View: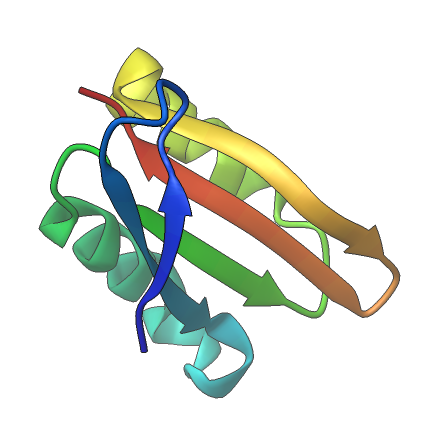
Length: 89
């Protein structure tokens, strides 16, 4: 499913792809998340859903991708964590 949003400069549509980590076996989650992030093109976003705040994962993503991937919380409610990972141009 793709949802269109405006990019920060409002010039091009931006695709957002859902990724629900709750349906992925724990031993495969980080590999699946990094695989999904690696498949995104600049300007695309992965909307990540999880049942807990994945702070170690966020550090790993920041260490690996640095400024290339933006991280923004959409929801930070207990049991309902939603984070947008956006690949920057």
